[in-house]
Length: 434
Ligand code: NAP
Figure 1: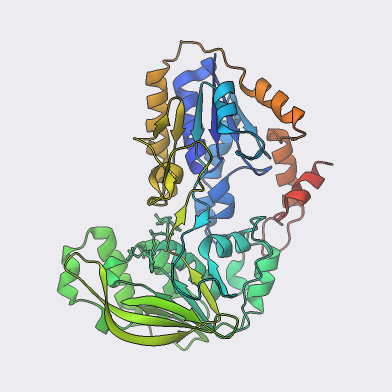
Figure 2: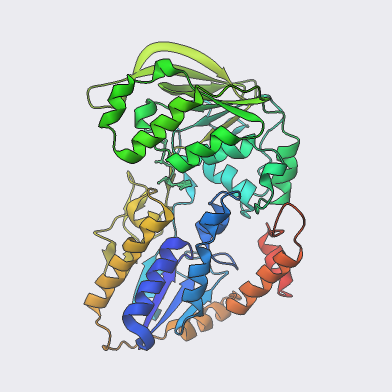
């Protein structure tokens, strides 16, 4: 019998567990660990609440954990409750799929002013992440700025733009829904340091912006290269750029605007004890396609600034780390002997949920090559882990606990939200009578 510990129960962890289960069948026990009492990581805390179709992938993960030999062990924090060295002692292989939950820093003056938040914080706030439930982002000003030209920037700008009715059917948490309903924000400026051809936004996500009830997307066609240049783009990017161009044709009067400000590099954030404005430098593309400042500066008013410029994986003691990439140092997923990384902890914060599937399967293949199904190990696995946790007073949650929590959340459902999500670890544990 082999014992595998997959740390992190987001998409990367689940696809890896699925692949290991398929490769080993009854010859392995696979434990999926998570620091929270309930699983799904990015699906629960990252994917936008108004993108329920993306969240539906969790149904597939349900099947994985319901299959023989796979278990969920929640409420266990790696590095606090158990170390990587201890897991390596207990398991034949340890796979780190802990994602990239930390915001990359802008590295500009004023970044620490109140009113400046990272996308992990803001997204966590509206998704009920226990660490960010108290963020209370300032929504009392009329202007917000979103820095970055990726899909996360679009998520944040869209969430700021929607009406209560537009959240119908979502699972946005109550505190965010109520705060957003009272929001005074009327102008959201999305700042991209490069141009429309360099966006990292996908067509479906851009397309939604043309149909917002109260918000008009605004582009300046002077920022775009001649239309013929779109022909050189790869098809998906061409579609995105076409959608952006079409925003210029929308004729409508709406209360709010979402302004795409291209070739705009934030230099600093200013304000009297809190964010009030961004000083931005106009850029142009250099020979390599990177943003180069032109020296021309201007200000963009914003009492809320959300930086959506990417994420990093937190370092863990004793695990080789790639500072520049913000991920574990690894070679095709292998960090060291019997220690692996998958997902964003392996590749950095890129790709869609589906990208994690081949990623997890590749690492599972490597593990199966190193310890072929049929060979046996002598590790203690879950039984040993549970003994260790008990000796430390840590009470892990299991599949039944997680289901009980979800059932309680669902039972608290109210109109406009299919589930009243718990936003405190203590509330989750109270549900279990702990
Ligand atoms: P991303 O796609 O890598 O975009 C990051 C953006 O930040 C880029 O536009 C980048 O510009 C900009 N940026 C980086 N450093 C900057 C700086 N110092 N100053 C100004 N701008 C800076 O990352 P993301 O939006 O966080 O998304 C992460 C991944 O999740 C992506 O693969 C994304 O597609 C995926 N995702 C998907 C969905 C969905 O499918 N609905 C939703 C959310 C996220 P440069 O290009 O100039 O570097």
